[in-house]
Image 1 (tube, rainbow over the protein chains, first blue to last red):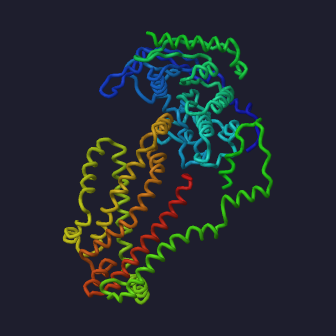
Image 2 (spheres, chains in turn cyan, orange):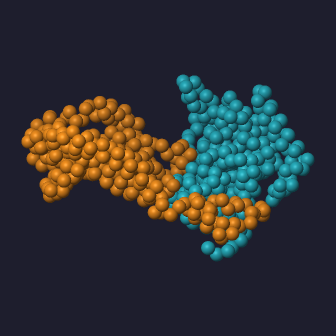
Image 3 (cartoon, helix red, strand yellow):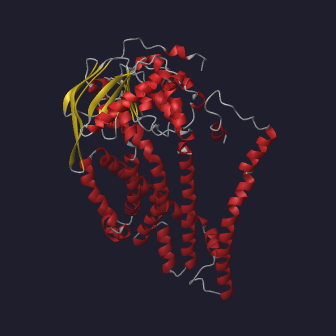
Length: 277
Length: 286
């Protein structure tokens, strides 16, 4: 592996990331014979290249929203548009880099094979090959997160934080224009989590893909995002949208500024108002 | 060893790292952690040798001191002597039995794997197949010997079918569990890059089932042999089961016990082979 700095990773052309438009989206589930409205009339506009966090209490439908945008389930009514296409079409083109809550590495594949798994998958039936050319060098990405020494190790020999880093690299290695992250740091300890947030921003800064990041943490949402969407539960709906106008790149010092605290308060307030309704 | 040591290296740069242990201290630590192979082997072998020595010693002593007739009970040494004097007889019949057990097991793997795949891939098939599987599990397989001999005759087919039926249940249960326990996150991850059922099955479900199938195979080794032997009891003209029936008919207990000795050795050796191959195959689980 040649020693090339992380600036080399800036290969994705700007303006390639498509917008995400959500209109009047509703979705219900049956749970123990009871109808649960996971989402009711959700409207959302996410610009290409934007880092958006979705935050809300348990059961507010934020994971459901993520899955509807990613074409992993179908809506009852309303629609999602990603660029000019439906989520299903985008999924078939492998346009989504999905980061689930658990690392979900396949234990029988080495770290490197796990990282390239998504790139090699999904070409068995037709169309799904158009995204492959934009995929990024997995070796460089592993080097970026300090795991190149573990490329040939099995996941079991890695700590939880290291596994989650591999999971991030796996999504970025796909080179997808949209990243969907479902509380990826929720299971990590506070120190690892904080380090991971900055690592995520580092890799993302080189690509400027669209990121939709579901989280439980107000601090995390404010620290990472261009915009924070707060949601309310029963029925799941969008409560507010706060623009986070902190400069980039984000630094640890910013987390202690009055502006940061003020933004965190605003998000907390809109969450509380969502509760009250 | 070297891999597990690597993990303990500091993960993040910029931290204060401890001074590296000197080479001597490192060697000492390694030795204390992992003694020499000969020492480890000896430590592992001594306790079971003592256990078996006591049991077989007491057995031998009982037979020798009380002068028990060889029809009632056969001394351990007599079993070995019996096998020693007629190796070709025992070897030929053992080979017949092992082949029957092997083919029975292989058929069971195929049928159980196919059935489990259907059940995991389509819910309708689960409803259609599960009652049948429950029925197979409820039938006392060994009691199927007599009707199977009537249908299939005294040839190897009867024994192969019994060995297949008796090993089917553990293989089927572990295949269903292995195919289905892949975790929702991994499933959605594969779906998110447009993987279909077939691709998820090959890339995720099959490798995921391997540890389950290896442990099921360990259970199935003695089961398959028992199935074949029982099939031979019911009606046959060769195999260890046949030899045992003949020995009993002529009140020659040393043949019967010689066969038992061979069967035990078979099961132990084959289990060891399965363990070894499983160990190689499942490197990633350690």
